[in-house]
Length: 255
Image (tube, rainbow, N blue to C red; front, side):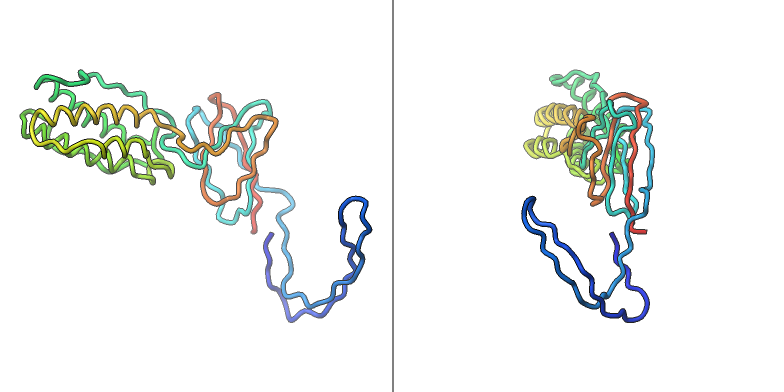
């Protein structure tokens, strides 16, 4: 409800009221007197409704109107479920797998793995299939063809992985804390042997990151608990269990 000051200085009033108390108790009757300073402007008679029909089971971002004071969410068909999360990492898991040998052992394997990690990482961060927005932190170093280029590439990937995992802006408000810790536990490479150790650890960390979706699910609702009230403190994420199922939002706005 909003309160809007209007008109000239209001006159004093006296309003008889009856206060309801616990069941069975005697009501208290009296009169309120005073000078009102504002006029109350109620919610619209009907909420503003928006229907969403995702063509996927991935999370869809729902952003309340700037004037929304409260919002309700529910599936169009009450027997269908709606999954709601306040924070996510990926809209849907990235199912990309590493084709190179993991763990790498030989020189040739180490070059192939480093090159694939670079390519997979660049493809992953640029995709809005998984992210709220694309991440601009592309790896631009040369491919690994020697010990020096291998060391440079895997150390650069170590830095870029950590930065990407911590980027809440592209990850629906939630950093990948597990991925950040996994990268932090590694050691900077100084030669071919340590570069192989590092890239094998990075391969494992990145595979785990790709699979992360909702690290902080707000609530999963069934027909018995719908609709869900959302306090409009920011955007949220919703997804249906079946592609093509629909859900609606009902916003109560101040104007």
